[in-house]
Image 1 (cartoon, one colour):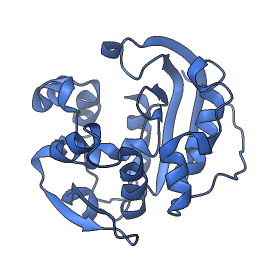
Image 2 (cartoon, helix red, strand yellow):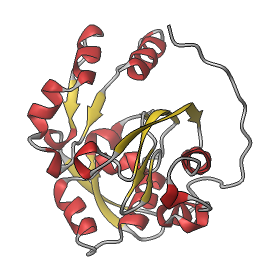
Image 3 (cartoon, helix red, strand yellow):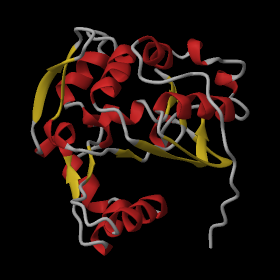
Length: 222
């Protein structure tokens, strides 16, 4: 909520139309109820905005420049500027959940089932959706994360990391996130970007770079 609040205050200065949306996973429960009860809802309400359920906003089928077809959120596709606000976490299937995989929320449930059922390649799908709807900027929360899994309901254990990451290249953000997360997550120890399938695919299809530079800043939270 704090990250979203800061981002909303920043963009409201430019008097642009802002849409805050999410597409909850099927196994998390009723999407409408989840969004109504979500902590982000109160943040949106404070800014006179609605937390939009992307599952209710329609989908469209697109084909990437590499000939890969997929169905994605029509609303997100129409946006001029996408700001992605992921949380850095380990993930049992993908290895890492972060900037690139945050776009998974733009897929409809049926598309996700095809990926989880291995009918479609989930790793390539994550990479390809980022070629069509690449975030203009990613602000990734790595202050508090998990070990062993990406959600408490999947057996995750809360852990402190203490970083915020931001960048215009989601692949570079994930590469640095992998470096940080590997210090506390045993399954990622000694892993390189090419060892994480969706990062390798993202590099292959030209989403971004694995060679990057970082600039550090100390942030104080009051």
